Length: 477
Image 1 (cartoon, rainbow, N blue to C red):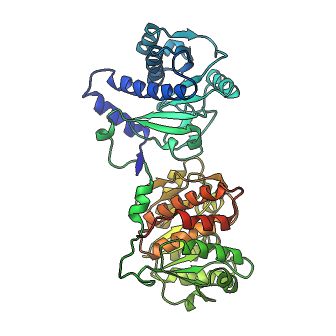
Image 2 (cartoon, helix red, strand yellow):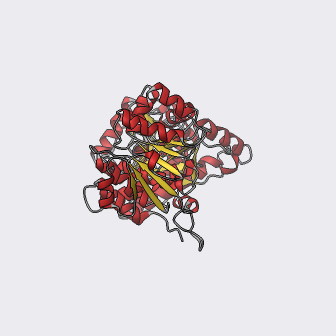
Image 3 (tube, one colour):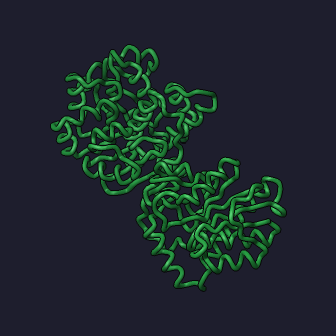
């Protein structure tokens, strides 16, 4: 997994590291890594020597990183110019290095450019771009100029991934020492483009508890249940699916499809869409009610269930068990009822809730806003549940205060029924005895991969995602 740290933690680590190395070492390490990435981009576009690069240099160290990187490039034959956005506060050492290498200062954005470097503002910035910077960036984007951001795209809220004003939309971000939250979560995350991490020696000085983690494929493989010679359908886990209804049978079919793609050995369906479920999935054991379903190791409840008294009774029956449960869609609406919420918070067995923003607002009293990690953590603590807050960068938050940002999301999943598939997969993982936190992270990760795979063939539907899920899940060996 990768991890991301907040600004205060990065600053503390930088200060500790700087006490052990010669002055200016960190900036030169960062600048060298930045220059290397810029040179690789230029080489892909026709060559480094003779290419034209503009540095948007703001005040302080972020501008200094850009200026020193410009000096490296200038010594390789690049025509480097610098637009000083705050001339009276420019990094003097970086500017002197650039000039000594043959770079020049300009007072407007040149017309013919191969690359631009965003060194406007770094970790210490707040709010959106100032007017002069915004105008320069807008002109570059209008011309189609490739933009490389220094450490973080200027104008984003670093600790939350929020956007409070105009910001740089970079093609590549070269970040130093560690990831920062805005690179992986929130509305700002897409503004980073491709992210490259440059090691400047910060690792040993970073605190152990990062702001959030980002899963990678080896994590999912490690968590996935393994089969052995003694495995059979019951030992693999049985998942109960209480979803769908006569009015919404598709939700049942899709959630069962998601569950069948997971590691559980059997699916038991309980609800009003049994006929449709069996038509699509004949291996499923179907009944009409949760109380009749038989033994399971986890429940999925809510998708297409409805919100009438019969649906509420099914949800209460699930909550009365001592089993892990995934609550989705209509179950979340039913939870707004005070007595149901009290029953949820008093449960000892694990709960995972899977709201999108509007469902989150019903549960929490307001939408998550730009600080999606903070909002999800607060709800997880209040509900004593793992919260899977769906979105382009889905957030998983735990009552213990841990948070994850999923990197595989895609807008292709913004279509009806894909959340039903996700809930089914998540329930299958819980039934297979994967810990709730890991189950939620793995389900979101694989669901995103399935959405991407399905999108390669054209417009995506939920059945496409369910089918693709079977192709992207890890082998059980």
